[in-house]
Image (cartoon, rainbow over all chains, first blue to last red; front, side):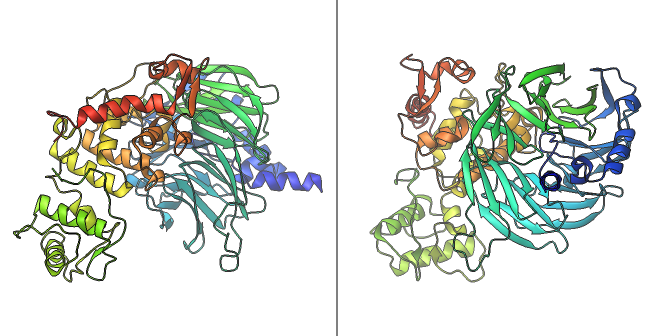
Length: 352
Length: 256
C-alpha cells in the first residue's frame, strides 16, 4: 500500500517549478516506467551535447524578461514565456526556436501541463486563465471569475480541476471540462504557490505572509458553514516569502525569501527541516526535482544554484546573463536544468 | 482641498434609501461642495440627507457618471463614491510632485484599495527617494520604481524590473495596485501601508513588533531604519521614515 500511495501523492502535487512552472504530473510522477524512460531518452544530457555543468544559451530571447520555462514531456522540447507577450517552443538539444505564439495571453509567469503534455494552463495579465493546445496555440477553454493578478496555476492529476491564485483576494477553482468557476477560498495575503494534492480533493497554498494552508475542494458548500476556510494552516518562513515550491510527496515545501533565505519546511507541521546556506539575495525562482532529492534556486545574485536536499548542501552553481534569474526548471530525468533571466535569455544547464 | 481629513471614508450609504449616518452625510456633503462638479449651489453641510443633497447626488450620477437612472445614493464601494473621491481638484500629499494623470489615477487606486491616498503617496515618496520615478533603482537589491519592486515581486506580478523601469510612472501604478490588492480594505494606518511594501507579515502587528534583528541579511540591508541603533528594527522605527514623508508631503510646495 505504501508503495502505491507514494506515486499517487506524487501525481497530485507540483513538481519542478520555473518561477511558477512545473512539469506535467505524469512525466515526473514515474507512474509509467516506460514513459519515463522515453522522457529520459528524449531530453538527456547526452542529447544536449553538453559536458557536466556546461550551459548553452537558446538562440532567441524574451525582450525585457523571461517569466517562465518548463520542459515538455517526451519530445526534447521546452516552452517559455516572457514580458514580450510571446510563448516560444524550443528544441532543447539545438537551442533553436521551433514555434512562436504572440499576444497578451502568451504572457504568463506560470505553466501547468496536462498529463499527456498536449495542453497548457497559463494565467493571462487580465486575470483570465487559458487552457490551450500547445501544438496550435488555440484556446480550448478560458476561465474567468478572478478579478486581478493570477500568478500561480495548477491542474489536478486527473485533469478535471484547475486552480489559480496570486494577487487576487482568493484562490479560485474551475472545472476544466465546462470552464465553470466552482469555488473560491478567501486568503489573507498574496499567494505565491498553489498545488493540488491528496487525491485531487485538496489544494495547498503558500501565502506571502509565510502561511502554508490546506483547502478541501470537495467540502460541501451548502452544509458546511466553514467550507471556505482552510482545513489547516501552518506558519513557515521568517523572511518575507518571495517564492515557494512543493516537493513531489506534498509534505515538504521549499520557501525562498526576499533576503535570500531558502528553507525546506515540513508542510504538515510547519517545522524547518533544512536551511540551505549560500544565497543572500532575493530568491526569485525555485524548483524541486521529481525525486525530491534535488532543488534549483535562482535570484537577484544572478546565480542559479543546484542543491542536495538530503544534506542541504550546494552541489553546483552557474551565472545568468541578466541581473537576476527569473525562472528555473528540471527535466524529468533530472539531468538538465533550464533557467531564464530578466534580460530575456533562456539557458540550458547540464547537471550530469 | 477637501475640508474633511484625507482618508476619512464613509461607512454606510448616503442618499435616497441610504443609511444616512450623520457622519457619512457630512463627508458626502463636504465632498460635493469642495468639488462642485455640477453647477449647483453649495449644500448646507449639516449631516442631514435633505432633498437638495439627494438632488446633487443625482446630478453627479447623471452628468458625470452618465447613469440613465440615477439612484441618488452613494455607497461606500460604489462608483459615485469613487468618482467623488477621485476628482482632480482633490489635493493629496506630494500631489505637487507628480503629473495630474498620476494623481488622478493614484486617487482612484487608493479608493479601490480602501487606503488613504496620502499614505500611499508618502510610502512611494520614501521608497523612490522623492522622485516618483518608475526607473529609480537600488543598485544593491535590484529593487526598482515607485515602491521599489523586488525582482521576485516583479516576476510574481508577471513583469520584470527591466520592464517596470521602462514604463511610465502612471503605467507602473497598475502594478502598485496589483501588489496592494490582496490587502485591500485592511490597511487603515500608515504603518500598515508601509509594512505591505517592507514586510507584509507585520501588517496588523503592534508598533513595537521587531521586523529585523542583527545579525541578518535583512537587518544589514535595512540598517538605515534602525533609528536608535539597538540592533532591532521595529515596525514603528521603519514606519517613522514614511510618517516624516507624510508631514513633508502635506506641507507647502508638496501638497497639490
